[in-house]
Picture 1 (cartoon, rainbow, N blue to C red):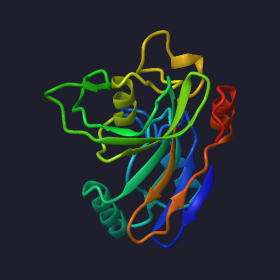
Picture 2 (picture 1 turned 60 degrees about the vertical axis):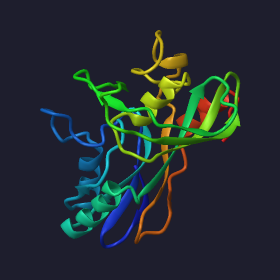
Picture 3 (picture 1 turned 90 degrees about the vertical axis):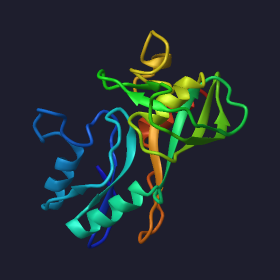
Picture 4 (picture 1 turned 45 degrees about the vertical axis):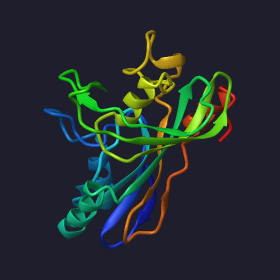
Length: 211
C-alpha cells in the first residue's frame, strides 16, 4: 500500500485492484483497505468516499470527525473533482459526456433506466491502442458503478470488467478491471495524484495503449 499524502486531518493512499475499500455486509473487517490502513497508522480512520473492489487507485480518508464531515460535504455538493483512467473497448473518436439515468438493482448492478437517478459522466480521449481507447473520465455524480455502467451503455465497456459488457467476461479477457482512480481535487488540500500501478500499465501496454 502506497501513501500518497498525509497531514493532521487526512491520509490518501493507493488501493490495489481486487481489495474491498470497506468490509462487505456481514464480512469481517480484516482484509479491507480501510482496516489495513488503520492498522498501518495505528488509529481510527473515517471513510469519505468509496472505490469499487475491482478498481485501483486513490482513496482519501479522514483522521477525525470534523475533517470527515467537511470533506463528505465537498463530495455531496459535487465540489470534489475525481478523475479516472479507463481503458475501454473500441475506438472512441472524441470526448463527450453521458447523462443517462441509472438505477441500482438487487443484484448490485446498475443499469440505464428512465426511473433511475440522474447521472453525468464526462470523458476525454487520452490515447488509442489496438481496438481500444484510454480515457480520462470524470464522474460528476456519484452513483454505484456509474463509470462502468455509462461506458457500457454507449458501447465502450471497460476492459477486464467482470459485470458490465457482453459475455464472455471479463471483457476482453483482461485479468483486472482497467479502471483506476487517478486524481482528486478537493478544497483545502493540494491536488492529489495516484499514478496507475504496474499491472494497469502493463495490461494497457499489451493492448498498445501507452500511458
